[in-house]
Structures are given as C-alpha cells and as structure tokens.
Length: 257
Ligand code: MN
View 1 (tube, rainbow, N blue to C red):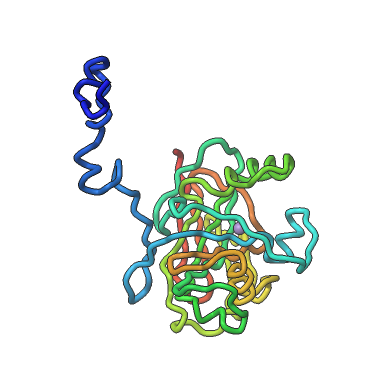
View 2: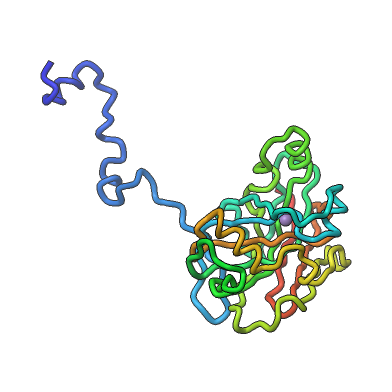
C-alpha cells in the first residue's frame, strides 16, 4: 500500500472521509468550534471584567459554620471552585436547576482580582484587587450534603449552570473601609441573612495571601468569600435581593426551568 496515496486509502471505505471534518473551519480558527466566550461582569465606570476562575471560600463566618453543624476554627481556610461558565449576571432570572429539591442561597462578598499574585503577603494583597461585588453562591444543598457524607467532591452541589450570580463590580477606590460594611439578603422582602463583613473568620487580604500560595492568581479571577448565617432554600417565584454597603445589589428571581 502506498501511504502517500490517500485517494487509494479511501477507496476501501468511501464513506469515511476524516480530512473533510470541519477542515475549512479548522483552517480559519484552528479550533473545531468557536471557543465559548468568557462571561463578562460589568465594572462601574470601566470596561467589563472577563471571568477566568472562580474560587470560593468554605465556612468563613462562625455563625454559618455552626448552623451547618461544623466546628469553628482558624486552622486553615479551604476552597472549592466554580467554572466561569456558572456565572449568571445579576438581574437575570435563575431557572430552578435539575436534580435538586433543596436549592439554597448563600449571599457573599466577591473579590475581583486585577493583577497577578503568587505568594503575596497579606499586607500587599489588596494591591491586586480590582474591585468588589455582591454575589450569590447558589448551592444544591442536597447534593452537597450527599457528597459530604460519601466523602466525595462538592462539584455537583456547587458548580452548575447559573450557580454564581454576580452583580456589577465597584472599583475598590470608590469604596471606604470594607470591614464596616453590612452584608444582607432578603427573599421576597424578608431578611434571611444579615451580618457585617468584619464577621469573616478570614479577611480579604488573608484569603488572597493564602490562595496565592496554592494558585497564581490572575486578572479575571473572582473569589467568593463565604456566606454568613441564615442560608436556606428557595423555590420558583422567589425574589432574592442582596446588598453589601454601597455596592451594586445582586438580584435574581427563581423561575421554573
Ligand atoms: Mn458559599
């Protein structure tokens, strides 16, 4: 067989023509299909923030750790992640997700990273922050609980479509002292979560410093910094409205899928 004669090879299997597969497109983009664009979060007074990675802090408010049946300690912060494609922009409806009967809200401060950070000291960590936003870490609590019981990863409970609802980012120089800000969530107008950011077990500089020893933080990365007590289930028809000081509120309505 002459391997250089590709027309000869195909004579035996006339319907198999691999070189025809998206050949023209591959020549134009060098990809089989268009890459999924990164979600872009609006930034007040600036161009948009294209999302790369989403890091989430577990148990960062003592009262929430207690309500989830955990001990409170400062041993080590721990993290899980959500895909950038889990982002839902604030103001849009959230379809009730599949395979859960216990979708929970978690109101959180979101930190937007604007510069590279690796092994950064806490004292320098705020230097890589571009700004802050209100966010909702939506959680399929039943799937997360099953995963915990079976010592399996949390991904299906935490990282799914529309599970990271993010409001517009406020550049940090437009904000006063972060610690003093109240964080609050209402569901259908009734307050469910209320705390103050200084209640966080790990501060924003401490979180950034610690994360930067595990990962090289890059512009486009977001950090969801954990939720205060008062998490709970939502159902179709519920309207969620979360605020942190003067930041743009995060809002969504849960709708039947
Ligand atoms: Mn959370």
